[in-house]
Length: 90
Image (tube, rainbow, N blue to C red; front, side):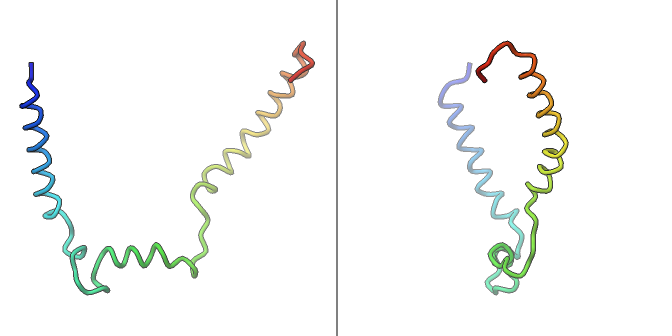
């Protein structure tokens, strides 16, 4: 059975390992002082400057074909259920 002290020690060691590895794993371009060489500045510029680019959101490209296929099936099933139901309500 593990004690609370052992669990806290493991958490501390894991946090220390992450704290040491994360700065070493970052690409050098992320820490560059010049704006044209800084990876994050380039990313931010690309994310925020969308006025010149025409984009179709990924969600529409994925969901519209699925909706076009499933909607007629769903409508037929609903109409069939309504015809066969004894309820006059919904």
